[in-house]
Figure (cartoon, rainbow, N blue to C red):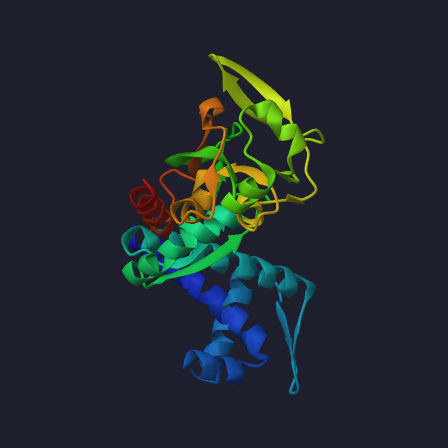
Amino acid sequence: MNAKLGNGTDRARALALFVAVVEQGSFSAAARELDMSPSAVGRAIDRIEARLGIRLLLRSTRALTLTAEGQAYLQAARRILADLDEAEQQIADQGVPRGRLRISAALAHGRLCVVPLLGEFAALYPHILIDVVLSDGLVDIAAGEADVAIRFGRLADSNLTARRLGETSRVIVASPDYLAANGTPQVPEDLHRFNCLNFNFRRAEPVWPFRRDGQDFALSVRGNIEANNGETLGQLAAAGVGIARVGTFSVLDELEKGRLVPILEAYNPGDVETIHAVFVGGASMPARVRVFVDFLAERLR
């Protein structure tokens, strides 16, 4: 057992030494890099070539040149060493959370609800490098485009793991000044004569859902401005541009300060969107992902 382990360790050292020789361009430069003598480096390369039975390097007094076999060996050596580093990093991560944590969040929810928490998380885990991207586009987690994504609504079937963080309701809002100037809708059908601000990623004929006497129905609305996030629509509504239907979280501050007021609440269908953290789970999940998801679940609950 020990002999096999030692042989594996020697092989890894030999790979690293070979890569160093190629990258440094000479035995002497590699020797300085590895704190060895040039002759020891040369003997190590000789042993690799003898074991393989092929020439990897062509030596001259001026330069080292890779043979075709040497080029193939170099590519394999780099790949093996990178895999080894990644495996060791994953094991180390299970103990002390560290490394780059790539987070994807929607624009409005990320800015209002996630970003304000990142300072506290960074203080708790100083060895984690936080890499956050706010965008309403979906990233491919399975393909490695992010470690954790925060998503709204129903999730598509996949092999990913999802952790419920909470939910958000929707509300129709307008500014007091807009209502004073244009009147207040009393029933959903009144919205036909108001400027209704919409999302630009919805269907071509935008509809808002309502409930009357226990029956759900949808109403087509019109407006002269569309945007890709609720925060923008809320700002426009607060500025008196029109009426918007958005996630409550995106206008919570404006509602609390009276810059916006909810309308048609008697017809609110009570629809909610569930918020999840989505990530690659399993036994090999890095500790940095686990602690971040736990942190979000606790703070956003």
